[in-house]
Image (cartoon, rainbow, N blue to C red; front, side, top):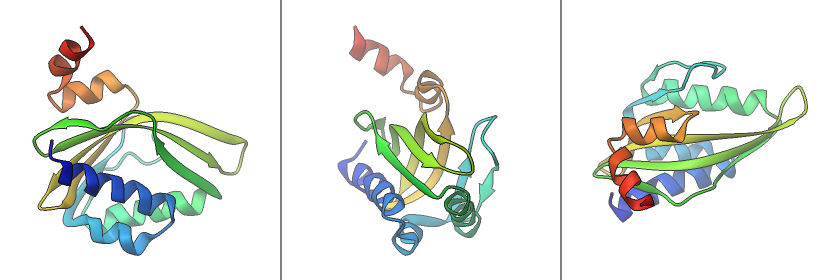
Length: 138
């Protein structure tokens, strides 16, 4: 995992939290793909930067206030960056806090693939990092 890829992902989280959709769009590859897990309001997949950004805009419209804050360091290998996030938002019901892991694939300083996971271990496995993570915990 390169520091450059981590900075791209960090910039994306910061743009989202600042509600800066112009900055966010610049961080995504034109052919970007986003996939969410079962139980997500709209799991997709969303194909193409326009579809991904449309989904982000829908999330913004649904939730009156929301932010995503990393709750662990960034991990990964090669072009993959994983980050555990707690998302706080207030929609049409009570305020909620949701914890999940996001796996990003970064190519040429742009986010190409984003996949959300409810289970952190599943995200590590999908990114080929489960064994590496198990050794680090030993």
